[in-house]
Image (cartoon, rainbow, N blue to C red; front, top):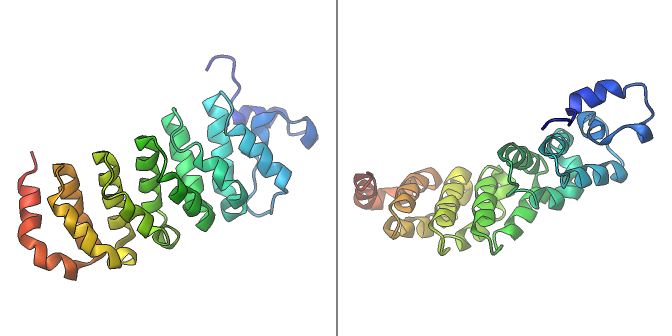
Length: 216
């Protein structure tokens, strides 16, 4: 936006300034993953996640991603921005949540119960990319397989598939989505079933073939 300095420009302008005098985005732009930040630093980044300018929100989320699990105390602040109106903010927030590990997975699992289906959809999608941390909440993803919104159901199926063998114990419920009323969910289930357990997929070969045969 016009008149808004980029974080990199602000960082260059303030190199000689004391930390307390640096403007907002500089803290985010200068995050160092090799140092354990004080909580006040994380608090500042969390505040920046609510800044009206997307460049500031992006910078804050990217800083948290660089900090990784050290940003875990503010995983909740990140999770509140998963449905941000700016696509790059959403992408940066998702990356940061993945980096926070178990803390990020836990707050995302909580957002699976949100009233807004878009929040549920995004939360499921990000959980599916979190490997072992996400697999700890596979049962919460299973709970969304019967969601009233077909996009949420598809995201939950995709997420379980992305978790692979870590979600193998849920192969049976994934198989039941092969007869879902939405063709996109059926195709997602066919793909996911093979990823979570090829052995479980074998008895459903005919149903899987029909799911893909219905593809437009």
